[in-house]
Amino acid sequence: MKRNILITGGAGFIGSHVIRLFVKKYPQYHIVNLDSLTYAGNMENLKDVEDATNYTFVKADIRDAEAMEKVFAEHAIDSVIHLAAESHVDRSISDPMAFVNTNVIGTANLLNAARAAWKERGLLSPLGGVGGGRFYHVSTDEVYGSLHDGGFFTEETAYDPQSPYSASKAASDHFVRAYGNTYKLPFVISNCSNNYGSHQFPEKLIPLMINNLRDGKPLPVYGKGENVRDWLWVEDHARAIDVVFHSGKDGETYNIGGHNEWKNIDLVLVLCSIMDKKLGRAAGESAKQITYVTDRAGHDLRYAIDAGKIERELGWKPSITFEQGLEQTVDWYLANDKWLRDVTSGAYRDYYAGQYSKR
Ligand code: NAD
Ligand code: TYD
Image (cartoon, rainbow, N blue to C red; front, side):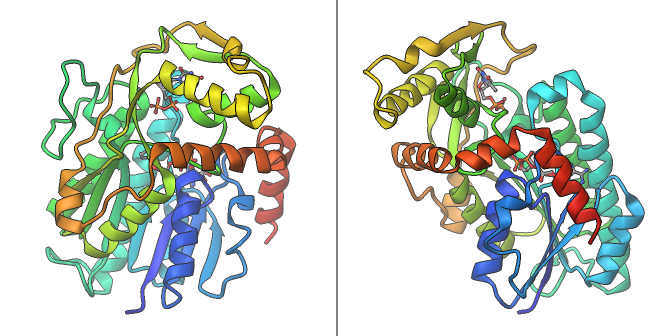
């Protein structure tokens, strides 16, 4: 079946893996990547698909309601996979309104554009699914808050967001469900744990540590390093998005995770030992860079996903072990030194923003 799929945030970390997967696997689909190219968006991430005949890039901002209407009309969009967001918790603490504007208002703009376009084309329906529209919101497990007494987040766990980032994602999830209930917009949501892998902006824990390890800089571990995260390889998340998009039931939520919990300090120590080997350092040398720093405000203690539903109902499970994924990730960053240098320099970002707005 032919589909015109709008993927937002496709120049970012997870979005670029989703775009690559869809463009290559589904030549019959037209994939429209809409991204405003913030500091986190990078056209280099998509070099290998940018000339594909089933792919179009649109530089636009989801905060711009008119631009959203235009893209639905110009490309006869019948499906959305929405990833565009401000995504970093620390930035949400220093600038919460950026998260309200993009994650909440931007998502509402997209929902309005989908609702109007799909109403006109008869794609709104309680059943949606094959032949109907599909609005897929890619969300986070952080909407469930913080686990303190063991257990796992399930799809039934009540929302209890604790940071401005997770509150903005929770709000956007609520808007998606409200549009489903009120306007019969066919939707599906997934809530995923922490991702790692190639092309992740080096502000998040794993690429930041790899970058600093390589440069001999301090490795800032927040608090005592005892917070726990459940890590999933980004390509396994992209595979899960493919499965949920094609086989997920309308109106349902799917939790996605790697059954792979790590205390931050233990994870940083593993990265140090991998880097000792890769950089030919003596065992224990890299760990000397570890520096305990002031804890993040309101730091969630533990996230852990029960991914039983997507495994049972849609047959998805992670494809590689954490050891394999981390090794591949470190190798990618070491082999892509220029990428790392470029994304950490403002001039690069400004250059690309200028380049693409001229098109
Ligand atoms: P990212 O920060 O790497 O990329 C975000 C992308 O969105 C960038 O390309 C950026 O240019 C674009 N963008 C930001 N604001 C925009 C706007 N106003 N208009 C248009 N484009 C805009 O993020 P990521 O880590 O790839 O996360 C993608 C999605 O997945 C987010 O919605 C995030 O909440 C969710 N998520 C992320 C993780 C994770 O571990 N990274 C886990 C679960 C869910
Ligand atoms: P991060 O990658 O920012 O993801 P999130 O906050 O969305 O889970 O952080 C992962 C964990 O690592 C989190 O507990 C905060 C911690 N952390 C550090 O200890 N030092 C750092 O420099 C960063 C960026 C994160």
